[in-house]
Image (cartoon, rainbow, N blue to C red):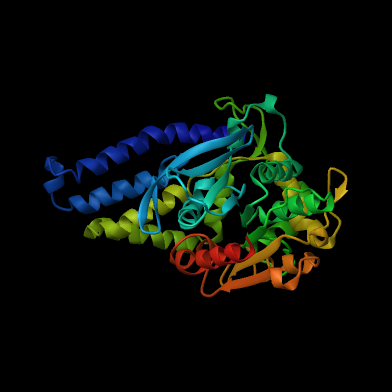
Length: 406
């Protein structure tokens, strides 16, 4: 019922937001007489803020058209290599001949935001790497006839993509997928699969959420599993292809994101309003771009979400050594020939200190000279994979690691 009420509210707000957007333009367009009235900038700023607070945010595009490779601009073609019901594998193909670059599979999170949240990650890697990314599908857009999507299916998807791109492959996982990616590679190692990647880089993920638990971890442990089943799971309404599918709705996830730092978001919107009033275009545009991405969320399949809560955050199955996938025990200690690099942010309030580093203890079969760890100073969760510190510090370190073990 809550999902239907949300859709009703959205249908009501849509014409109101369109009116606010139009009104904002009327008070800023130089050909409009209203733009020359007293306080026109303040009025326009108020309308735009109202529009952005109430509008519906669609999935953004990667919009990476070119990249500099050794000082020369190379065109990028976004090519879909594999299409599966719940995911697409996208290749950022370089329109240049003779380029021999390490192949990277970037596993994006399926945890609320679209894979375009890693746009800056992709852009940073592209200069020296041949990049592929998992582009997860909004569950409300997947018809019920495609069946359910479990945490095990996520792992099978990752294994399929690794086998497709191996053997000269380097896997990078950001946040949530560090756990299923480690499971996928562990199972392949146990089965002595010949399609193993060369390296795996794990960034800011909950390998062992018992270490330095954050607000996110505490929510998962304080609430009973039945609370999640009965409180946050809803059926997709009839105006979407996935009508009837049980999901954890994106709008609920977004409310949770905002609730973690309400003061920070309120201050950001106040600053945006003042930038509009004073005509400070550059920071105002930066605000638009950030929230275009941050406010665009997707629905997660209910079975996948609930299994992640139980397996990762309540039972700690991976670090406890009790996780079974398809009847097979997940044994990270069986990995011996895949180099491991873990990256954490000093100020990460999503995945606490040591949660990702725990992978080194679990992967005891990897030689010491094939393991590396880095804690980025003064870096929060999003700063690990986006922004100046990502571009100037973390991305070059990952490049060096891949080069060393490639």
